[in-house]
Amino acid sequence: MTNPHDIIIKPVVTEQSMTEMGNKTYTFVVAKSANKTEIKKAVEKIFDVKVERVNTLNYDGKTKRMGRTVGKTASFKKAVVKLAADSKDIEFFTGM
View 1 (spheres, helix red, strand yellow):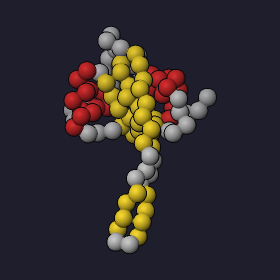
View 2 (cartoon, one colour):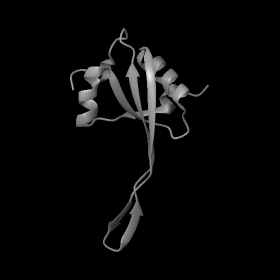
View 3 (cartoon, helix red, strand yellow):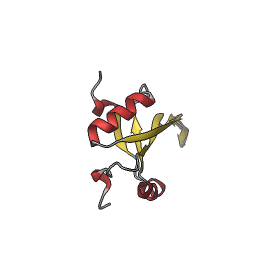
View 4 (cartoon, helix red, strand yellow):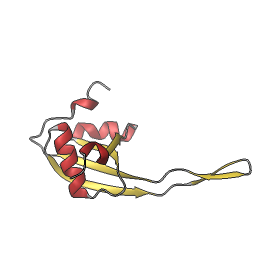
């Protein structure tokens, strides 16, 4: 089994994701190769919580221009993790 810290890359900190934390819903950028089962196990192991469900979204990189130079932003995978009602909150986000 791979390291759970290789699956969960970083949390997504936006206005919408911060308001959803009141409903025990947390958003993370995850490894593109990770599936829902691996994401669930990684979150449960890292934060010692009980996960109810995991939704994933794949984002393609957008083409951006700076003058005549054309580049592409990175593509990534995002996971929205809903914790069980009897689970504790993830302390990492408290106080933000």
